[in-house]
Amino acid sequence: MFNSKMIGTNSAGTPIEPFVPAGPVSGATLLKDGGDLAPGLQNMIFSPDGSILTAIDGSAQRGVSYSTSNWVTPTYPSTRGTTNMSSNFQGLAGGHIINEATGNQFYAPFNNSGGGTALGNASNYFGGGSSSTNNYQTSTKLIDMRWSKDGKYMFARASSSDTQIRRYDCPSAYTPDFTSFTTFTAPVAYRFLWISNDGLKLYLMDAAATFTVREYNISTAWDLSSVSFVSSFSDTVNTFSCSFDVARDGSKFTVGRYGNFGQAITYTRLRHYSF
Image 1 (cartoon, helix red, strand yellow):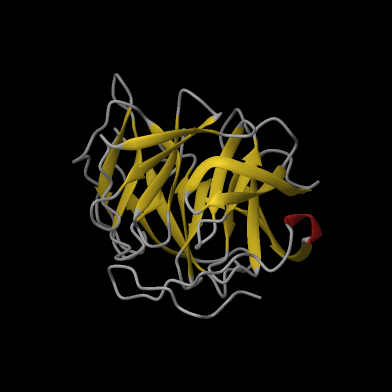
Image 2 (tube, rainbow, N blue to C red):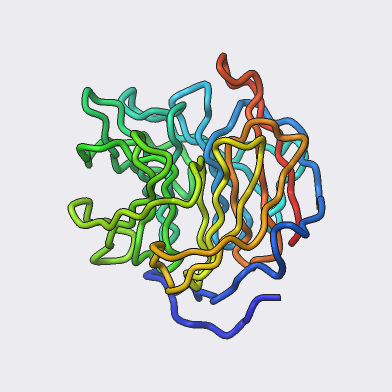
């Protein structure tokens, strides 16, 4: 079980727990098969309290959100709301990251001539209908983005490499300085990453293996220059991954797969596991 002693708060005053998952990923057991969801979803991220699942609609330029319960999505959940994106945002090639403090801003890949990353406006974790705006742009398109849970760092993969992890400094919580980053070499080529609240556990979704999550220990919190392999887990149902996320309390994780990959992404199958 996670350590419930608090180590601080984020900018919204929400407690940050120093949890690590309760056991090695190799011992995971199926908790619930959430079934096939339409439309096809990409880069799914849960809200900190586990009540909302946000994602990018893989077949349209929009963000979507679903009501969940304790980081587990009901079968065929009803949509809370959508946020239509401008045509410059890419729904298919990358994903998004939500500002956990407010739920009203997100970063997403930006489809301009050189590629980039843009800041958009949502409404309550995509629960409303606010249009997005492309009011920030970088020279490199960033995908698979994740925050440290206190908003101090943003981790991301540049679209040009699946073997590098970039760590961007945030002068204020959830506000990256895109000119200041450290590049780490990932131990394997990966699709998605996740880091525990204490910065000492790294999970990578292997890009080469049929749906496999690899678990690593981090020697120094948030410093990915020295990691050691712990265990791995493979989901035989999900043959091509679309996302991976861990519950805030470290007790469970969710994986998903694309439907009709390479054509229209028409559905996503969610599988929930307990550690």
